[in-house]
Length: 172
Image (tube, rainbow, N blue to C red; front, side, top):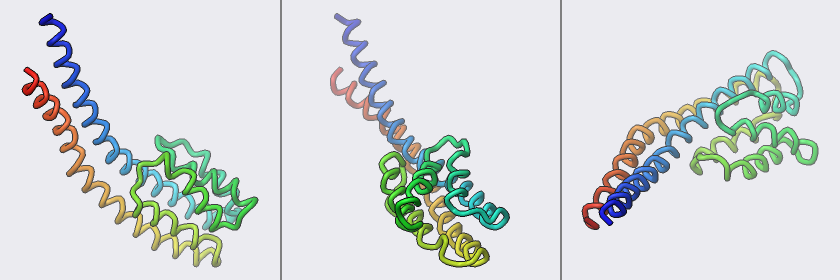
């Protein structure tokens, strides 16, 4: 009987610690997704500037890049949506479809959504200039994500373990 009791107590601590780590992981994943998106925007900017390919092809190329996050899927979906919608609509539709799978906050999504309204509206130099302004806003989001990760990630890990210990103490 004692063995079962201790097994349950250890399981409670393990479960609560796991929950804390899962909640903490959201902050890490958000930062990773934003930094990967920044990498993809740099590639987009270079492809617009140097290859002068249509945006549909550029989006397809970017969507094929191997990353640890799913943000590249926004580009893939947008490239397939361009056949039925204009660029801005296809971008917005792609974001809505992928938003569920990403760990981004609403303000991140709003920032990323704004990119669709600037692409394809001007000449190459105008687009490059608009992308540079977009990258500044994105870098602000990345800095915010870093600060939140530093602050909250460690806290959720600790809270998960502490909550498990408190439950065990109460039950014991």
